Image (tube, rainbow, N blue to C red; front, side):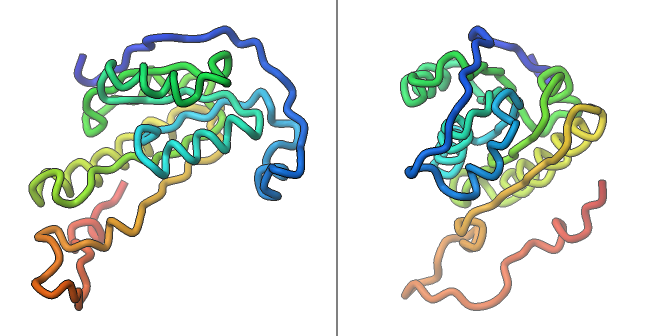
Length: 187
C-alpha cells in the first residue's frame, strides 16, 4: 500500500506507571516526569540506534508506535521488546519517501523520533540520498499537520560520514562528503 500505512498489531493500552530506579539514566528520569502515557512514533527501530532508543523510551514509561518497512520485521521486534508488549503497536510503511506516507500513522502521537535512514553501500548514491532526504521531508511535513505532536527528533549516525563510494584504499578519508543537494533542500 504505497502512500499509506497499515496498523498491523495494536496491543492493549494497559499502561503501567514506571518508577525511576538507580539503573535509569538521569535524562530518562527527567523525560519520564508525568509522561508515562505519552506516545512516541519511532522509525528505524530495526537498527542499532533505533532499537536502543526504543528500549530506553519503553523503560522510561512511554508507549511506542513503531514503523517498519516490512511486516516480517515485526516478529523480531516483538521478541526484543516482549517485556513491553502492552506498550507497543506497529505500522507498516513500505516507502517512507512517498508524500503522505506517515499521515494516517501519526494520529494521537506526542513525539516523533525519526531514526531510519539507509546506510552507504546498501544502495546506489542517488537512491541513498533520495531515501534519506525525501523520507525525512515526508515525516516532517506529515508531523507538521498533527496538532498533538510536540517535538520531532531526527538523528543520524557516524555511518553518514562514510563516503558513498566506500573508504579509499588504505582507509584514510579526507575531504567533505556532505552532499550539496541536502543543503539546498527546503521544506
